[in-house]
Amino acid sequence: MTTPSAPREQWGSKLGFILAAAGSAIGLGNIWKFPYVVGENGGSAFIIIYLLCTAIIGLPVLVGEILIGRTTQRNPVGAFRALSGSRFWAGVGGMGVAAGFLILSFYAVIAGWSVGYIYESFSGDLFKYADPTKAAVHFEELTHDVVWIIGYFGFFMILTMGLVYAGVQKGIERGSKIMMPVLFLLLIFVMIRGITMEGSGAGLEFLLKPDWSHVSGQTFLIALGQAFFTLSMGMGAMLTYGSYMSKKDSVPSSALQILLLDTAIALVAGIAIFTSVFATGLDAAAGPGLIFHTLPVVFMKMPGGEIFGPIFFILLSIAALTSAISLLEVITAYFVDEKGWTRHRAVIVFGSVTFLIGIPSALSFNVLSDTTIFGLNFFGLVDYLTANIMLPLGGLLIAVFIAYVWKFDKALIELKNGAERLFNKNPLLITLWQIFIKFFAPVLIFLVLLHSTGILDVLGL
Ligand code: PHE
Image (cartoon, rainbow, N blue to C red):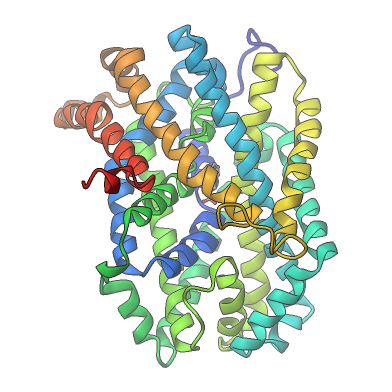
């Protein structure tokens, strides 16, 4: 796949696409980020808004994003250009590539923590800190150590680069097929342990009884951002994976399966963490360290925890890896397709660049922890800018592009490939997709983005 005329690699099967795309979607977003943003934003009211964002905006836009990729068989920039011939829209693809760099740069820092915790749990250190407060203190100590944090961050980047270097099918598809189901099973174990702990009821209540008093314009933006982030949407990762998909496979049913798997994992992770957080008296709003404060305690209290602990962190690191490779793949596909670079050169150069961009994020937990911009540290700022602004904006533009630039009817012809049976049986789905892509998705994203700027409050709306 070095030149546009060479036959492009494709997934080995439909299952290959679904597993790889689910591998991209399922990652730290579900297991590390979801619980902590839920904790910071008041529990179940936030979850309800997040689920609505996923269903009303996430699904139709996800279908659209995969479709653009499958139709053009290109990277984000080339795909938008091919369908519109316009430089503006190629630039929208370019924004996705930029978001890929930024997201990977902080994502790999957190993934490094997960890798570091594999060692912690194998060496038994983790269990010395099984007391909730001690676990939190130990986490602070580790992340304050510049060598620890940058070392594991760098190590994780090398792993990611290695897999993308190996190429699409060999590197990405094979790994995802085996590990994801095991991770899911293990999370279910942790969830059962959480639910059966004494005092877990308060956690369930936190997850089930909505408290709307915490909800503001920001809550909507963060929930929308979380929906995009966890589905790997709005920056071209799903578009790029879709570009390796066969026209014989159904885009809508693949998108739905990815979304259901992704949401199920987030919810199971949420239950596992909050039952444990409340049972052990930890702080639900502890922020990015939340799962690292909580899980050591849960594993300690679990029969076989010494074995499940390390396995859990191994699988979490692998889940992070299958997401990270989709981020680096977007950047790589762009330079290979558009600039004629070899895959190997693109991976080495841009993997290294991403590492450099990520250093201030890694330092945000120690040396730079007091340096804030708009009240956020560097890590928080890059996370906020990408997840809550760039991805939803990307999603808004994808919807507008399909509806008004590519034109809905042309998109529909492509969408029908592989989904003939689905649409013959349920013709209503076409109308629904049309309404959501032309109207609901763009208008709602626009309103949420606008609301978060405070402009609506100023206008008294
Ligand atoms: N969806 C991934 C996760 O939840 C993160 C990601 C975001 C991956 C955007 C690719 C693109 O961990």
